[in-house]
Image (cartoon, rainbow, N blue to C red):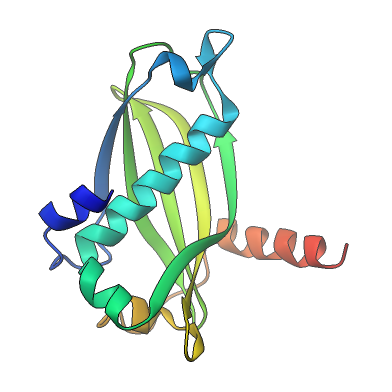
Length: 163
């Protein structure tokens, strides 16, 4: 990912989708199908790829910032097999004053294999939490209703916080 950050464009709109490509290897398999944990790893790598396409790594860290996934929900549709070419399309679907929600759609050829929704938060080592506008300058304010999947994810996170 560090090498990728040096070759990324760093000037694209944060709202445009980014495609990441992976090869399913024996290390990603569990009894001939992709292990559940591998989908989480692919979505995490795709988040970083999306991030590096939008921001300068040097600039972001120089400001004392870090971004990390707060929670993630993955819905599996179909298993992948050894040596499948997995294409992950990552896009911001919603943001508010504290968090950014990314959607990862994972395909083999044109068949949807999995969908993941990730809640991303930013942190600054000096000031604490940072807003999505600090992570992606120029992103503005989200216009429109909150997507249903985001509302349901928020309810799930609130229920887990009560435990």
